Length: 400
Image 1: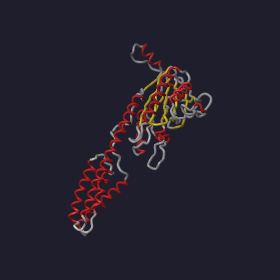
Image 2: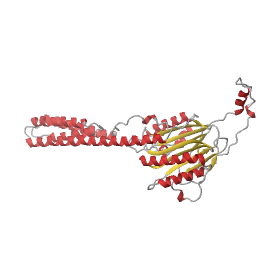
Image 3: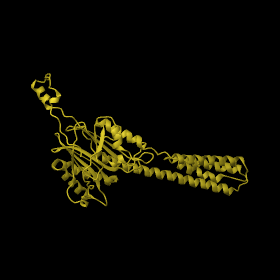
């Protein structure tokens, strides 16, 4: 698995929204003005109780260091006797109360920063454990496999989001290359456990079951056995034959793959939608399937809803099909990098959910005859080949 490098940096303290920063700045300005007015005006009037707001302001300024509100609070405490000396007409009890209030709010603000930073560290640790398990589960995919070129990217969501259960796999089997992309309903370690069960069953069933629909049925039974509550998994399964021929699709409630062909993008949908894994009991009969042409030079893009449900600043979803249609003809690896960069730009660099992108291109197969002649001539120069027009043409089914 190749992860998006934009998420490998350690998480930083999120900046305050602009409106909040303006309010904090205005509060600091009012505090400074109050102290200045107190020092310059009537000694019968004091603003020393206002100093208690200083440590509270320091604690909400986006800091995760306890010494920041502590230092600000102690500085404010120093100003209490300064104002007491300037305001000789104010009773000593008022200044004493102000000092006690500043000290109490300093302690509370410092404790709050410590509590928030501790909880964030615990959340980061839990997420790191989940991500480590996910990286172990989603092993690296081969760049080339049985006439296909493959590229995948996993995009981690924002630091405060719980890790998801996105899954994918590409396998060479006796029945051709088989692929799966799925998404577990739910988050955290429970979702990763479900994803591990699905991938384990797929890796075994894809090698021994001739029918892709039977593989889907076994996946459904696996999720149903370990299902807790309302958990289910959406998944799309593909079977690409080693020889020229139609590709098979079984879709278990997942988003339809996108087929890029000569600059045109279309969705590949089964004639009848099937329910997600663990919900097959809601629809009687076998899984439906679709045979479609996946010709040399075509690209298939499989993805999870973390991609298409990503939003821009105005709340609009990311239009993956439209963006894909504008991309130049590229190999899977640079194309998926370009899609990830475009998605990051569209969302402002923040994703609300984990996402996976799998791009597969069918390569144009080279004829075995020249290689055989090459061997026959003892590895020397190949004899001239005939005109390419004499080569057999590839017959493809139209896209359903």
